[in-house]
Length: 88
Image 1 (cartoon, rainbow, N blue to C red):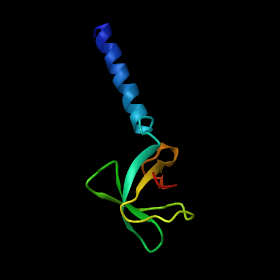
Image 2: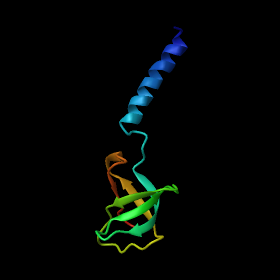
Image 3: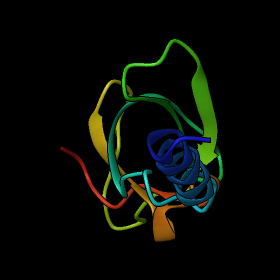
């Protein structure tokens, strides 16, 4: 194996590991409120997607409405741990 190929393979391994650990996931994303649930969680379109992410917890001190633009925080860069702190 040539040196260039070896370096490319190592870079791919490192990039894949970092991706799996969430290092390329940014903490802040945009969203649009699709609906508000009874438990005050929000159903939101994230980053202009065509599907709704359901039941995201939101700041209880803010009154959110349908079609509000909001900030979505990926807590610890984890896409499975979302929170909406405030409107955009």
